[in-house]
Length: 214
Image (cartoon, rainbow, N blue to C red; front, side, top):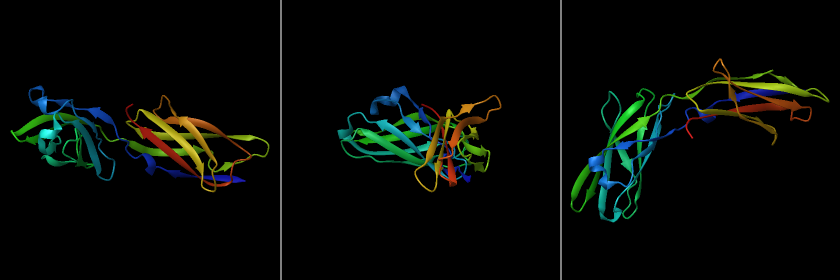
């Protein structure tokens, strides 16, 4: 019998990273804390950056607008989900594969009955991160009656903190969770599992998950 393994890389092309921005202290009285953001440069398609802020005295706020400026480019709008009396504020903006990682300048204008004030933040945007290659050895996997077959998974991943893998049968509920792969001296992530003769024959999918941050 043979177990044919097909690669599936789309599950983890660019995982989000949680980073914290820095508010300008002189204008920070509109907010209870600094901004936090999930922001990274995508490998391919555009993604949406997400930032979070907490308003001071939200009942007096009548509107929130903002813009964020990437390095070397013009500012682009940030859309906020402002609701009266809600302190938590979420903002979203577009990030393209051609944008630069690093410090992005965020400016948020908060309007109240007494006027409007703008607060400046710095949002750190992570560099490109994703899976560039993955493989299984042996391929195909030939099951051995009464024995086990050692299967090695390898993945080349850019800018990740942890990389994990899972092998899933497409014919049923059979799966092997390899957990976190070990990054070896050549930079490649590797893990090992064993297929017994009771493993489901047919096509399998390898899922690679790359994560950055805590």
